[in-house]
Image (cartoon, rainbow, N blue to C red; front, side, top):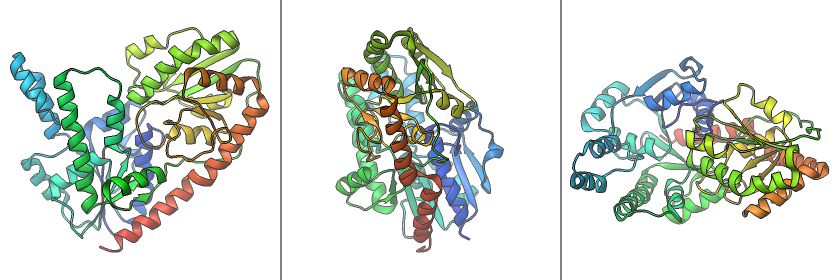
Length: 412
């Protein structure tokens, strides 16, 4: 058995946010390789605890909680403490992007002593975790093997988040520095780490941008039997997501502002949108407080909510990676309507395993079709279930990941 150091930006929590669920997927097979020491930031532990997580849920040998500030956090504190406009401008231009989780030398030395060096495998979840590992243990060599799951391609997600926005000159300069740092960091990490991504399309990006061949470990959920379809004259549509995550919040606001009025005009009170999610900012709650929309917040039994709904929407316009919420809807046999970016990396067939639309008019028309046509709705839902079970079932993905990572660890 080889000892494993698992450094994660998110707490592994199978019932949590998408990023926490992916971290849980990794922990589920890493602990079969050997005893796992898990390192997570305190803020991530607090976030997960607010969603129902308890540390005794973790199945690992040791939990280490990072509490000290990193380079990025220190630069943000210096910026916020600046009093004069000139000093604030200067420190603003020096801001480090939050993913730059470089440890200070004294902290790095303390962690080297606390964690030791007898690991057969170092696994980092997200680019920020790999940056932290390199700052503590130095750049990667042949031993131990280092593996990093990029999950989302950070530079792509960053670029998309800035498209079409109006920004001041200083913000544009800061964004340019951040994007340049992200792209360089991705290249540097890829030189000495084995890269993991969520999908074949992300793998193509890694090969093109970073000149290396990554491992593909898809997101995964548990699949049971095909579920019955909701049968009622009252039609409920479901949105699930972490609501302080900008791609989720922006997509939901777009749907409520641009699509939902068309649905209400066509279907009236027979249609209802249910919004499930945690950490909703007040301004988002205000934006979705319109007739026909019900904000449920956090729910204890998501299966019961899916059971009462006709369809799930994933109106994502920015971001990267693959959406666990689509796979979850597949597992509950519910028809999915999403955008091209929303289903990116899943390689589904639009109109078969899910409906796909990119404009408000098309999105509204396809959602109305799903609501009005139970035969179409059933066909899309069951095709999605079969596709999801064949490609994203938890047991199959765990076995594939374990075999791949174990083979790498065996080389050290």
